[in-house]
Each structure stands twice: as structure tokens, then as C-alpha cells.
Image 1 (cartoon, rainbow, N blue to C red):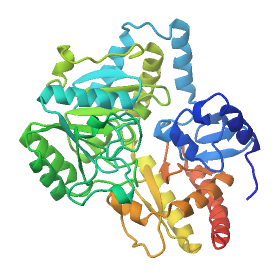
Image 2: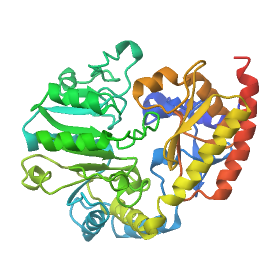
Image 3: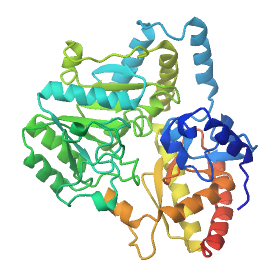
Image 4: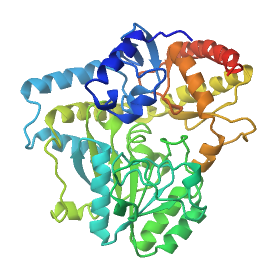
Length: 446
């Protein structure tokens, strides 16, 4: 392959002399052959410093639901910047955003703002422990809840450290974590309601909350099997635990009411990030008034100098108005586009004898590159994903796609945005055909 990214490579080399590791989020180093640098974006298109244009399905790791640089959002941000960026005080904007969230999300009786979903997770877990007087939190293998000490317990352990089927490891992927944090968690397997029941019964009366991604977007895009979410709700009600839905990715992507409305459940607390701000650093904890009482009373500390700053609030208000204005048309349009892309990528893969298997609800999906001899069919849990995904071969195909102008996330995730159109999908498939042809030819020699 030729090096089409010389300017990005030059900037990355320069960055390593001032920025620790050359990037400001470790995951960005995954991009091959080099972390890319961009000059601008428009709609579903991105443009890099080497003059290349991409149809973007990474879409800001899912945050850019509305497309890159939407004019309306730019206007409200600019207008607010002239009035003030930060006051460390209140504004009517925060009430307007909170009232919109109450209107859109049935479980959002009360709201608190933060700057990232990682912060909101920490707030939610602290709140759950204070609410119940219990120390343990149950989370699921492969689910991602921010990069802090608590959010990554059990996220992506290597196979030799998985633990048993009944006792998944509490391993954290980062060094420097407070060791005692790991002991505050119980890890269960996703999409196994019976296993969940056994785990909860094993620690009955000790668990403060169950936290989960309604769709496991961060690992393989795994939708919940029948009975999974209802079992979480049932057990939380039975044992007085809080049900915490991490809708950092699914919130507003699945419609104005999020995945909880889409799948028909009501959590006690919900974590919102990414699309709520459309690319600005904004996130929110929403929940039932009863579950938020320890914040309301001031018994737990929830603070932040930049919380509910007017610049991010103006952007979030615009985002929420955009979603709400779509009514019942959203997310049906995005689902249709994504399902078409999935189906035709599958057809291309079959034509080129590439073992690629897309899965997911369409508006977000994952392309699993199956290892030789791996079974076909839906991937339902983290361990199955690791055992069947051919990471190296997917990395090669992903680079072929990138060089032909189609940008998906390094781990195989694709997002549809409100800016994608049928013509963009058609063009992306034309480019993908070229990329698949080259991958099929080159991979034989690897």
C-alpha cells in the first residue's frame, strides 16, 4: 500500500514531542497506518490534512448525530459565545435543557449536568451507593462506562484472564487503578438472564445498582436478547437496587426517548452523553426524583466548575430541538439507511469471499470479521466476540476502506448520522467494492 498520509504522519511525529503519546485519547492511537489529522467536516464528510475526503461512519465516536458543522448549531454557539462562555453560575438555558429532557425521556424527572459521560457514570454510582447504603455494583462483561477506575472494571480482559463462566474477572485494563475499586464490583455475562439471576442471588442484599448499555455498542453491537432488560428491571425492583441505563451512545440515536423508550423499559437513572451535545463536551444524569434524592438533599457531592456552562447548553438545546422536531420519523430513516448498508456490505463480502458479518440495529452496527472456521450467526456476548473476531484481518480491510474514502471505527463499529443520505450510502458502497477487491487480493499474501 502507498503512504497517502504523509502530512498526518508529519503532524503525529511533531505531536509526540509535546503531547504525551502524541494523542489526547489513547484509543486514537489505534488508527492505522497513523492517527489522522483533519481540517474540517461538512455533513457526513470529513477532510484530512492530506487533501482526502471521507464518507464518515465514525461520526465523532457517535457524538455527531447531526452531521459535521451543522449551520444551526454553529449559529447558536456563536451567538452564545458573544454573550458569555462560562459564568460558574445559573442561566435560564439550563432550565430549558432540563425541561426538554423531562419532556422527551419518561424517566427524566430530575436532571444534573456534567461535561462528560465518564463524570456522569461516577456520579450515578456514587448516588446509587448513597441511595441504597450498599457498596457493590453489578456490571456486564464487555460493557464500557467511561475510562475511570470504576467504569472499566471487567471491560476487555484477555482470554487467559477471563475467569470462569460463573465468575467473570473484575480485571481493569489500566495500570494505576486503586486495587480496592475492583472489589466493589460484580461482573456478569451479557445476554444471559439466568446467569444474571445467579450473580444477583449470590450477592443478594449487597448490590446497589445494575449498570448496562441497552445495546452493547462498545463491543460488537449486541442487542439485548428477549428477557434480558426485563430481568434487570425485575431484579432491581425485587432487591431495591437502582437500574442504571448507560445511554451515552443510544441516547437520542434511538429517538427522542432513547433506547429505553425504543425497548420499552424505565430505568431509575440514565447516563446521557455524545449526541446530547452534538460534539461539545456536555453530558447529563437524569432519573426518577426518588433516585435523585441524595443529590437534591446535598448528602452526596455532585459538583464541577464547568457544569452547565452556557456555551454547551446552547449547543445541547439546539440538538434536543432537532431530535424532537423529527417526531416519529426518527430513528426510522437512520435504521433504513443502516440496514441497507449492512445488507449490501454483506453481499459485497460474499462476492469477494470475505468472512465479514455485520450485526446491529442499523443506525449503529458492527462488522465482525470472522476467524477461519468460526461459526456464523449473531454474536451475543463478549467472549464469543473475542473468540470469533479476526482483529488483524479486519484492520487490513478497514485500512483499505479508509484509503478509498470510507471511514469506520477501528474496532469495527459504524454509525449512521442524520446527515447521511441514500446517495452517500450508494457512494460508500461503490468505494467499498474497490476496497473489498483490494483486500481480497492482498490478504492472500499476508
